[in-house]
Length: 199
Image (cartoon, rainbow, N blue to C red; front, side, top):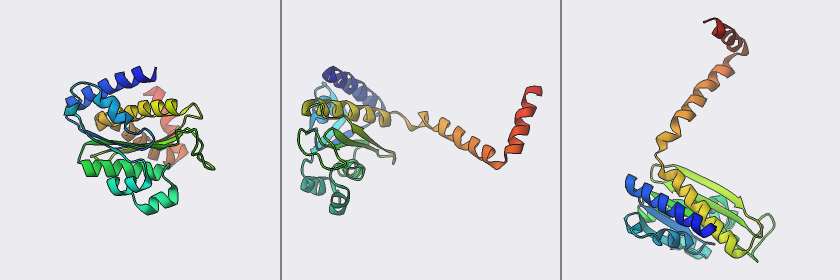
């Protein structure tokens, strides 16, 4: 199931990126290159895929992706902060349009207090400044399953940022436009509501 999901997602992502002329880099820790592997498994992926960083050790995250030692010491390798720094580092070092990062605890060992087996942090960064972070707690479902599900999640997040940003904008503007009206005064809001049915 995971494999076919990853394959279908990889195809869709590559088609979308090819159409929009976007390039991708990956920065992987617990998945050890599986995301890059899933994408480059598809013929013609060289139009889109630039490179993959497999940064398993903290040293590799620092040297290859520019993750600050202080970030790793303060928050740990498996954290929102490190995942975000990895994605931004990959984006900058590769000079691509989109970069995804994955850092987690695939198990069976490696759990620490507050960081159980199956905890994975993901981040996707786009050249236009958009960044998404996500945390998944897959549980102790087995090393292979954690890694496979992480690949699918990473591909889904890349898909989100590969789509044009305009798609999400109108909704956000509508929400922020409505907020001040409600906040201004409940009375005028109620009066407006009363007027509406007549007009």
